[in-house]
Length: 447
Image (cartoon, rainbow, N blue to C red; front, top):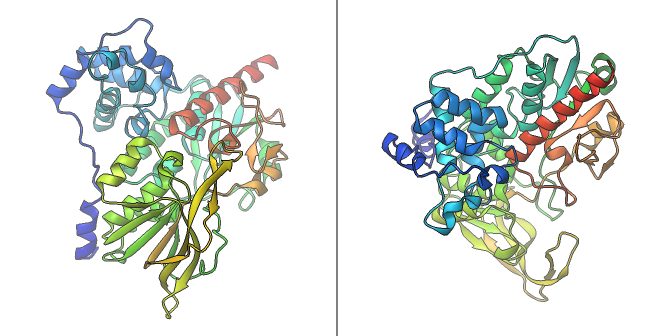
């Protein structure tokens, strides 16, 4: 690694520091330990928050970590990436009196202790002779695997990438979620006897029919694919990037000094767009603009993500639509042609539709363009399993997560979209748990 890269690496240390021991105890002792805790009700995985905080206050950090991870197999990750101000902390009864308990920070403290002390928190159940294949090793897949292994199932996870962990390992910037955190959660699952076959792609290395024939049940947890094309001239130029692939390269240690001094534009205003924009800033980009065709009110990024981006010096250009990416004369990005937009009638997403303002064309000087306008779907793989879906959003029973094929269950981003749920790590973890429970009930009904 050369000198500039060493300097850049320091930019990817976690931005949020752990609480100090004294702060931890003071915060834990502020908790009222509510009997009918609204914070627990607000957590999609139902973590017993008063219980884990009480254990911190009494010095039982292993017990605290176990309470967290029992409910949420991605508990260490979620301590860092959950929108706690909208979930548990947003429901804390102390909001009306002072400040909510720093639940996310306390959760982080307990799970950090477990990681540092190499704790294995759970054990595999007695083998029951049944086998389950899980396609994808992201939050939903790992969560389902953990639960099934504890119930005695032989679980095989198929993962097409080199490392397991999915979004947590590859898709969230390291200064918010270091890769070592998600890999510890992967290890917690592997130590239960779950086999993870990485570098194995369904449809290429093994087909869907073979999977269906070899296993008693299947969990489809494949997430989503790459960012779609913008559909404008110039997308083929050097300097145009897919936000997902850019973040993945950074997360996997492929740091480069290429972006130092560059002028960058990120198209989109979701969490991934903000991750890409802040990544570029920390990679040394001189100026980073986020281009969004709607207004601040319609952006889909979490409030804390938006606040962080502003702190990082990201510039926001609202009501702006890219129309073309212009060559600098050498096959690289040189400018971006845009138009002004205004908001019209409400569309199917519930937001007002952006409409182009006549004769509003202008250009922006840029060296780098990053596309962050959502992700495509693995419709080919979904079709290979013969599952009913709506444009790549797999249809499931909302209680059991069973698909149109009684042998196949689905969870995570593959069932998110078209107005169904919210794409959060914590939600995917809960769906994985519920799918595992439904599989177990199905197997018991056959005895």
